[in-house]
Image (cartoon, rainbow, N blue to C red; front, side):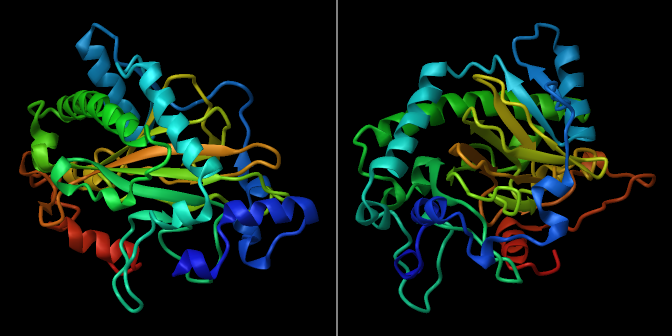
Length: 343
């Protein structure tokens, strides 16, 4: 299995911090190296912030609509998820990576037989390899948290013992906050508030949690924690830790997202771009790492059921604005994207 044949990045980081050298496969081409390509705006983040406690719904709808249409991402504050629930989610995730033995981590990995089909679930190093064989400076844990019928507890850590409780608690709060966001996004398109949610599968909308673990790196100027990409999800709702590193592309410049305590970061993904016929944009983003600080994040990818056909909503198509995307089953779209085939 992959994690048996090669070291996790977490284990590799301990060795490289002592030697100060990096394996060549982690060094990005110059055009991708963070130091050469990041634009610094100083202490003030330019990423839009949306406050869910705003009582003027018209203002709230306008704020989300503008953020989704111009940036494809925003910080969400006063979202209703208690800080304690977020802290518990982060605490059990850190415990799994920091305190679990290699064997305990291996127990959460995909057990597909040799030559079999591997899923993106479980503990591992990277969902897909770069065509040039380059690797990213991160490990991850990936599993579904909703709906209950789709959960495979094989991928959930048994230690710490409170892992399941913390994740199930967070899922309840996250579904409520995400539902509000999707309703506001629908209204921002001039649609009924349930339009996007229903088009994404309603109660069968899948919630896929990924814990990203980015260890300290001796040469953070040369590597990436995640390469530039757009999420294939509908939306992604991310909890960061206090260490910055997430960057988004705006006007051909990479801009680092500021850390705001107790905020969530929401990305527009490909499925919302398709449903909105391009009125909302899927954001291109990447992750950098630090020399002496651990970065972690907890994104949840909201995705339609595999068999659901997703295409531009009929209400948003007319003679002046014809369909820009072809309808297709989500599983087919996902297969094409993960395998870098024409979509």
